[in-house]
Structures are given as C-alpha cells and as structure tokens.
Amino acid sequence: MDELKSVTEYLRATVEMGGSDLHLSSGAPPAARIDGIIKPLEDFCLSDEATKQLIHDTLTESQRAELEDEWELDFAIEINDVGRFRGNAHFIHGHIEASFRHIPSDIPDITSLGHYPVIEQICQKRHGLILLTGVTGSGKSTTLASLVKRISETRSGVIITVEDPIEFVYPHLSCLVKQREIGTDTKSFPRALRQALRQDPDVIVVSELRDLETIRIALTAAETGHLVIATLHTVDAPQSIDRLVDVFPPDQQQQIIAQLANVLQSVVSQRLLARPDGPGRVMASEVMLMNHGIRNCIRERKIEQLVGLMEIGQGEGMHTIDESLTHLLQTKQITLQEVLHNCRDNKRFESPT
Image (tube, rainbow, N blue to C red; front, side, top):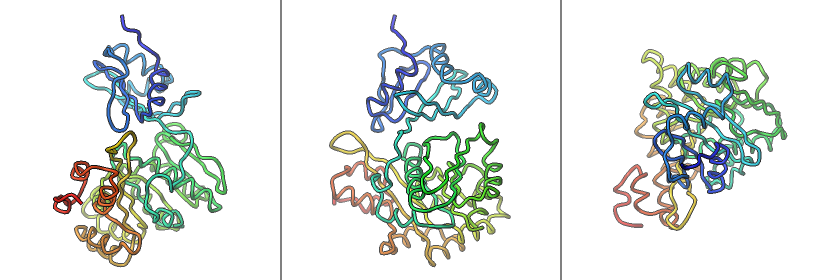
C-alpha cells in the first residue's frame, strides 16, 4: 500500500522544489504548482478520507466547524522550518479539498520584482487610491507586501492592514504596522475599514476589494486624505475601472465614477509568464498613472480611450501590457507564443520583433 505523508511533508516538498502552491484533491495525487506547471508529488491518488484527514490536520476545531457550516474557508498556517501558507479549503462534489499558497518569510525589495522604475514614484504617494491588479497567482500579494515594506521604511506613520487571511508579516520599521485578520480580529472588511478610520491611520491596506461596501468605504477613506492600497482581480487598468463601477447599482454609478476620478492615483496590473530558457517566471506589467486626460476619461466613462492615453503617457512613467511584452520579447525573456497568449493587440506581434 502506498504510504501517505503528512501535510507538513507535502508542504516542505513544495517549498524545496520551488513551488508556489500545494493542491490536495480527492481522486488525484497531491500536486505542487512549480513555475506555473502542476506537478504530482506522489504516484498514487488521494482517497476522499485521506484528503479530508490531511486538510483537517491543518485546521482548529472552530475552523473545521466553520468549514462544515460555510462550505469554504480561508485560513493561514505557519510550520516551523518550512514557512507560512495561505490556505483555502472548499467542497468539490461534496468532498473536502484544499490549496495552500506559500508565503515567503522575507518580503522582497520592490525593485527586485521586475517592475518598471515608476513603482518607486508610486511608493511615494501620500493619499488617494493605489490598485494592484491581476489574476490569481500573478504576484499581487508579493507586490503589495513589497510596496508596504518600502513605505514603512521610508516614512513615519501608522499602517493598518485588513487581510483575509494575514499573509506576509510586517515588522515595525519607521511605521507602526497593525495587521488585522478577518474572522480573527474583525468580522468583515467593511466593519474593519470603518473602524480603521478611527485608528489614526496614514495608510490603509486592503488585501482585496471584494464587494460594494468595501469599495465604497475604501473610496471614502482615500477621499479623506488617507493612502489606500488594495488589490483587485482584474487583468488590466481599463477593466479595473469598469469592475469598480459596475459593482454599484446604475443610479449610484455616476457618484462612484466622480469619486474614483478624484482619488485614484495609479493602477498597476501584472502577470507572471514562463521563461523559455529555464525555471522561474518573469513579470509583465501595465501601469496607469493619473493625469488630467485620464481623470476626464474616467469622469466621462470613455474607458476605451485609456489604453491610448497610457501609450501617450510613456514620458510620465506609464506603459501598457503590450509595451511590456514587447520589451520582454526583444530581450528574449519570453517567447512569441507567450506574448500572443497575453497581449491586448495581436496585430502588433504578427511578425516576430
């Protein structure tokens, strides 16, 4: 009979292989995502009972009860000599399954991630809204942590984070950093954000803008002189604007558009793409900074014009995803096939550059 290892052993193997995620699924082997590719860690499949036991071993009694009641659960675990992980347990066809995202213990310097130099300018903002966007697994959380770390190193103040769950753990540097976790320290994002406004913050960090009320309060916080940094599950800057506005009922959208046009400072969108010549991935990004033309486009909801304005705004530090892909292709960091899978305008890349 094949020997089942512990969750700790599977998580350790994932980290040692350079993996980002561990997946435990009934009817499939334990598997790690390594450089974007799913690779099995065993040559046998997990049974329903084995999968359930492995996942339950990572949860407290109260978390198990919440999972049974709510059918899904976000949580974080820390394993000595292995690291910290963000977990999500859920049901598939009535069976418990889970994924675990590895969170490095050291927060990387913002300049080491592959962003353009303009990211340093973004770190210096003192008020308004900064959005970090991308799909799951695109490195948003790492960029967010690196940005918060840089702010904490370079100014004095109070940073309050609202996270579900807490991922990176920030030291107190020049800033006092207060990290609050949904379900442990506060009951919801909206409630935590309302309270944060009474806690003397200079910077408010929201791990994800998920719903109408969270977005509304985040905009209000940015409007009242705070710097708000948040992530959003969108692929580029124009879609980010549409997503924030479309969450609201039609009769409220004009007010939200006006708020957004006033408080938005920048949108940083990113993707992690496979390298053609070895392990690891490379970042492609898009950066939109606010100027008079872009604010007017948002107010008038002429979102289709934003890409052109970003292209015109290269001198201000802006760039589109296609410009980033062009650079990566020219420097042979990615293949043309990878470009065509990720670009906005295929015609731009019809002939190899």
